[in-house]
Length: 205
Image (tube, rainbow, N blue to C red; front, side, top):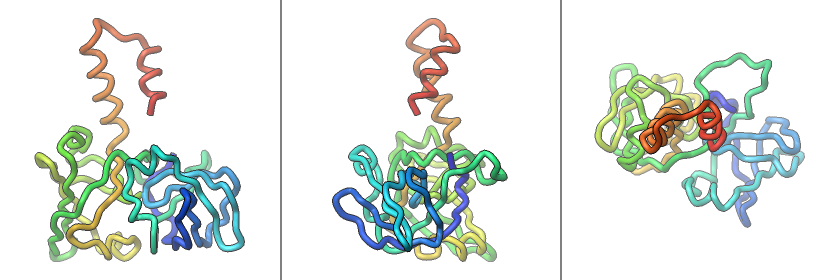
């Protein structure tokens, strides 16, 4: 589990044959889970200046692989002793969105993000969303887009300062919205559900 708070902006040294090599100050351990631009991956090798991770076919079929180059956001998995900040993030990307427009305000910047309409159900006004691994708050939701208002601190401390119209984004919607929607869809197909059924649904994520 992650929180959506970026711990470091690291550098991709290489990405080939499904292996991603990251140059980072973070001291990873073999088998650690680390989110790279919002994608939960497993460390398969520790190097002197970083670590290697492996991407499964399923992961590569969902994410935008162009995000696995240059500078990237990284966040190690949350430890039980850590202070909980941000929101509950799984590192499971739902879809790829696109920056539709960027509007400079007096002390913030609005980003309008376009997504496939089928994912809008899981994007909640004033709820949480993860963009390239960053925990953010949704302001408005439209038919196939949503609006984020980003403060200067977030722009300075993340790669959002480099986003332009057309930039592709790894998006993870709110986990609770997905749970509730999934449960309600299944509930409509049967008369009742047991707690065992609910547990099975939750374990599928």
